[in-house]
Image (cartoon, rainbow, N blue to C red; front, side, top):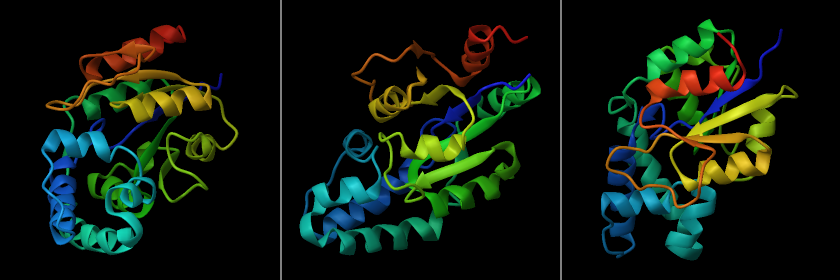
Length: 210
């Protein structure tokens, strides 16, 4: 029996690299003479991809800000990368039940795959799709279609309204695990879990897999 693919967001869901994202964005904003954002404001404004959010933040010269951001981010993102609580156990249990897994992220696909390799996680996933890999980024359904490659999907697990929008656009169910110290999504997901530990039961029971 072929089971449907379970898709995960990356930052704030399986891993935490928001502190270096916040630091790099703060430097870019400062170089443009823009006031600093709080950590919560960073989370609110950059859940979408850089090619979508940076023009809104920085205007016509957004590519300069993008270059500065990535100079800082690239230098440290692997050393600052940490796992979200319960991430490994969650993936292990789903994989043991025979469920294929994939990642759909708004992190640049190059850095997404470098981070997965750093964790030794590349082979855990059938696809690691990041920003720039598809014609459009989340919340468009294009990266989900690319990750699924014709397979059926079931749940998209994330932490933001962008993930809920993406699931709706792709015809998937959404499960939200809120990011610690982050913002609660304004949209209603199909399920809300307090931790990643609850995700396997949710997925397995919804498909009557034991």
